[in-house]
Length: 411
Length: 118
Image (cartoon, rainbow over all chains, first blue to last red; front, side, top):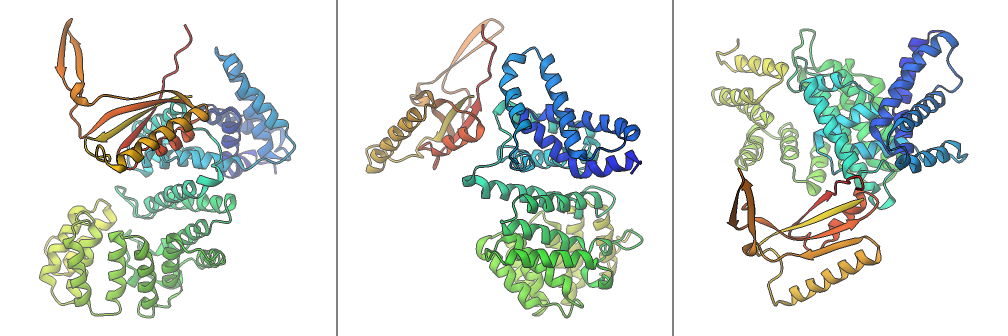
C-alpha cells in the first residue's frame, strides 16, 4: 500500500497500546512511554509516506520509540540514576524469548485499585485506547483542562507512589482483572447512556469499550468473566441503532424494530457467552450477558422468556444485593404477573431509600402506575424522574410520557 | 522505595485491655514486626502514646501557640507507624493489609519523598 496516512491510522488502532506498554515496561516511566510513542507515530507518518510501510510496522514503532526514550534519558541530568532502566531495556530488546504481553501490565496499572475510579477510566482511555485528552473530556462532559489535570494527577500518583508497570502476580491476578472489567464496563455504559451530552449514545466510547473487552479476552482468555463482559457489550450494543429514532428520540425496548438489531453482534455475543460457559464458573457479567442474550433472541417483547430472566436475576441477587438488580428483576416480573404486584414490590424497594436519586426507579413506578390505570399518580413520579435526569434524550422522553399520561408540561 | 504506614483506629476499636483477644493481638504485632524484619523491609516502627498526650504547636506571625490535643479532632486517631523499604506500592499495600489493626482500623500508605543527597 502506498497510502501511508491510511495505514498509520490503522496501525495506530492496533499498535498504540503495544508501543506505550513496551516502552513503559522497559523504562518504568509512563510519561516517557507516552511521549516517545507519540513521537514514533509522528516519525512514521513522515517516513512511511515517502519510503513505504515497513514489513513489521509495530516492531518499527517500538524500535523508534525505544531509541527516543534512550535519547531523552541521555539528556536527563540524572542519567546515571536511570542506567539500570537502560540496561534492563537493552536486555529486553535483545531477548529472544517472547515476553508476556506488556499490554496486560499497562492495563492493570491504569486500573490500579490505588487510583480513583475516574482516574482509572481516563488513564485507560488515554494510554491503552490512545484517545486524546479532548476526546476523553468530551465523553465525560468536563473541560479539557479539568481532564488534563485529572490525568496528570493520576500519572503523578503512579510515579510518586511507586506503582510499577508490571503484570500482576498469580495471586492478585483475579482481583486486578476484576477492576479492569469494571473500568471497561464503565466506559461502555458512559457510551451507551451518555450522561450530560446531547445524544443518548456515544458510539465511539462503545466501540472503544468493545475493543478493550476484546483485548482483555485476548490477554487473559481463561477467565470466563472476561468473555462474559465482551458478550454483554456485544449483545447490548447490538441494539444501539434502535435505541433512538431518526429524530433522536428514545425508543423503549417494546418499540424497537428487532429486525434492525445488529445480527452479527448478537451472533458474536452468543458465541462469546457459549465459550464462557464451557469454563463452568459463573459470574455476574456472564449472568447479565445471559439476560441480554434472552432479549436479543426473543422474537418480541411478549415472547421473551421472562421466567428465565427472573431466575437469572435471582442468581445474581444471591451474590449481590445491588438495589438496581432488585429493580431490574421487578421489571422482568411485572411482565409475568400483574403490574399491581410489581408496584407493591417497588414501593418496598423505594422505602429502602437507596435508589432515591435514581431516575429509573421513579419512571418505572410511573409506568407501572399507568399500567394499573392510575395516570394521576404516574404523573407525579414521571416528574420526579425528570428532575433527576441529565441526558437531554431521556428528558425529552420523560416529557413525552408526561404528556401521554395527561400532564401539561409537554414543552 | 520507602513507605510510611500510618496506623489509625478509633479509640475503643481494638480488643479490650487485658482480654485474651488483646493478648493474642500482642502476639500478632510481634509476629508482624518480626515478619517485616525477616523480609528486610523494616526501617522503623513504634506505637504512639494516646492522643490525650498530644500537644499541637503552631507558629503564626512569629507567635508560637500550643494546644492540648491532636491537630484535628477525628474519630480515628494516629496510633503508630511503620517505616518500610520495599520495591513498589503493591508490596507496601500487601504489608499494609497485614497490619494487625487493619481489620478494625485504617492504614494510610504514604511514599516518602526522596530528596537528593546533600
